[in-house]
Structure formats: C-alpha cells, structure tokens
Image (cartoon, rainbow over all chains, first blue to last red; front, side):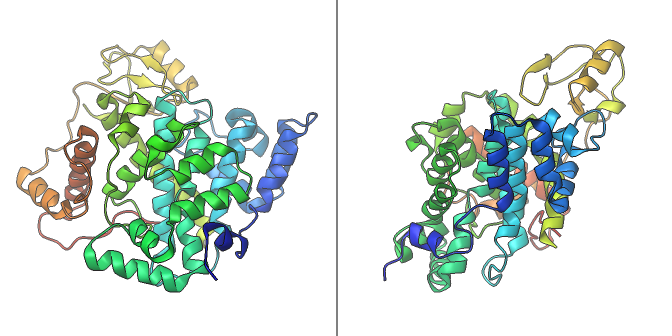
Length: 283
Length: 116
C-alpha cells in the first residue's frame, strides 16, 4: 500500500500531541481560567516543570532575578508562550524508540533546538508578538524525519544511502524514494496535532519559504535558522549540506546584515542553555 | 569590541553595538555611554550581556588556520549560495568556531555541539 505523509502519522504513536499540550490548550481557552491554572497543569508534571524553570532561568531569557515557581514563570513569560515552550521541551519524550543507526538522537535534538533558538532570535529581531512560536516551529521542523525513521525504516535507509552516494540533499532523496520529504510528514504531524496554522506553514515550506502566504516570517525564520544550524554544525538531523539558500527569506524579514554578528553571539549562548535545560528529557 | 556580561559592565563604558531587549527593541543605541542608572534599567529589562568599546580584544585568529577551516567546510556549503552575504557570514562564523575550538590547524574534524 502506498505511503503518504498522513498514513505515516496515523500509524504512529505520536498521532496526537503530548498530553500536556491538550491540557494546556483546554485551560488557556477556558474563559475563566488564569495564569494560576496554567501553572497548576505544568506543575503536575515535575519533569516538565523542572525543564521549564531551567530554561526560564537560563541565558534564554536572562531575567534579572531567579524565578522559583511555575506561577512566576507563567506570569513573566505569558500563557501562550509557556504553552509553546512546554511543547517544545516535551516533544522529545514523545519520540522514544527511534532507531539510532542512521541518526544520533541526541544530535538530532541538539540540531532541532539550535534551529529553534536561531528562529526565535529572528522572531525577536522582527518584533514578533510570540517569539516562542518561532522557537517551537524551529524545534519541530525536522520531526518528520523521525517519523520516517520510525514508520518507514527501509525507505529511510535507502534515502540516506542515496544522499550519501551522490553528496546530495537528504530531503531530495526522500522525495525520490518515498514521493514526499520529511517536511511534508512534519507538516502532516503538526496538522494532526491541531497546532495553529503558523506551524504547518513553517514546517511545510522550510525549503521554499517564499511559498508561505499566511506566515511568511515564521517560514523564513525557520529556513534561515536551518542554514545557521547546519552551517555551524550545531547537532545534526542527517542533512550534511547547508540548504540551497533562498534570499527571499532574508528579504522577508527585513533585517539589516549588521544585526547578524550579535544575533549569532546570542544564538551560541542560548543554544548551549537550551541543550542543558532539556538534556534531562533525553536521559 | 568584547561582549561582557551585565555584571561586568561599569558606568562610563561605551556600548559598541545596540543594546536590545529580548523583543529586539533598542534600549541603548550604539555609541551610548553607560551610567549607574542605565545599568539598573538594563537589569530590569532582562539584558544579560552587551558589547562595549575597547577593553580586552579577543585574540585575533591565525589567518592560515581560518583559511584551512574554510576549505574544510567548503563541502558542507557546496549547494548553497555563498555569494549571499548572509550565507558567507555563516561560513565565516563556522570557520572561526572551528579554529577557536582547536580543530584547526591540523586535527581531524569533530562534530560540534550535541546533547551529552
């Protein structure tokens, strides 16, 4: 039977988002709930609460004072933002049991976090209202590859070998072997999870960000962030070549090149902080 | 133009790059002088590091080692657009990173940064 991005998602254990996300959505959408209720949901998962506190107290935010409780964290960071951070740091757990003979799972998440950190900094520089949306989009942009490894390992291996033999892009080899690439699978996944449409667009169009009509900034930021993370060898999701660069993505953000050195300095610090903060999830 | 943490910053120092809050708003423009009052305000805004003029410069990197690192990275950047200043800035940074990490000159390439 022919495979499709949707069939890979449907037949997987990750066809629904981590429990905490659904609970958070419910609380946030409830008209009479507040920051306290959000904090309660987060505190009910001690591992998650610890990761969030580590991240909120890291170079990621650089708050001047130490944040001790989930309640303070939610108030300072914001409910929508903490929801996106919570998903970004719990999605790692959802993908247990990925075969590690083709990619190193730690390298995979390091690379995903690096992309999230850089995308988030682009979001911040363009005055985005929720920078954690950029972070989460970056963290999720390659999860399609994990699904391919889990649900279509034979094809995954064929694609890896093809890409290696001719020094080509892994996502192009995936298209040849499967008929679709990891971006399509990742987009199908975040759509199955009912995440806001910005995520589907940013993941689907990570290779052609100029095709993202509704959320051009998110898609452009993710595209550029993969160039940075792959170029600087911050982890790896299997792709060894820096993407064919779309200059339209850079133009879409409307940033001056002079911001780049400072942004890369920040990225390096925050990348280390993010990896440290979530490394417990990989134990 | 060293980057220093906020607790190393002192009144009288001149910032060499715009100091931004985490939404990217400019708090102190490039060339502005720090005072006790602005330092307190920066702490309140959650700024944790900034670039200042003068002070101890980072050691300049050996140009030959940088060239070697760039050559070693060329395969990785084979299929992208190195003519674009964004991409070439990323390659420059990648070469500097390899030299600083001690990979160059003349040791085998190691993968950089991962969760351990």
